[in-house]
Length: 196
Image 1 (cartoon, one colour):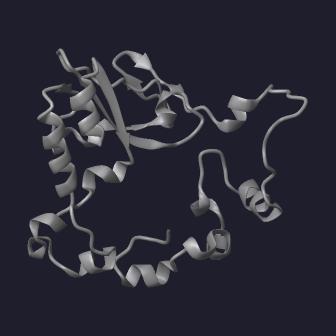
Image 2: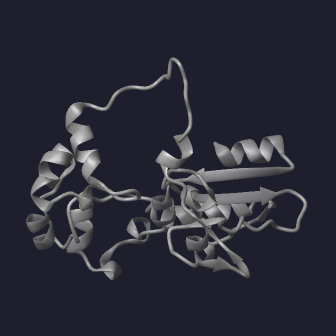
């Protein structure tokens, strides 16, 4: 539908964003466990990781727009993290920009980083912005928000800035994640690198 709208509306430019897994999407789905049982060469073309991405990118190229990314070789560099641009949230997205009359535009360079002393060219990047820093000093008389459940607050107090559930003591992982947790020991025997 996105490509159809671009073809019909013919905008001067468009911006398309999708979850990072988009670049590895297969045209036909099989479960992760079924996939790891097979050798890559035993998977048909529609089951190959990235097959849906390649087909969609071919259709986007057929629109005639100049693109910031045109195939799987630039896909990794098209995955941007909002935290790298001063947003107080780690949120990665595949980003594609198309322009009707060229030349193609480049994606922006990061302005922030989680790595001390990292530079882009000669410019030192600023540190990631934490939520605490972003909301520090806000003083609303009637703020609109929901309180975290007391159990979540207890877990969140144990997670350092920029951290996640993996920073909790390992004996708390299952309780903190509930049904979203795969036992890491079982996951290791299934070829996974850890719980989710």
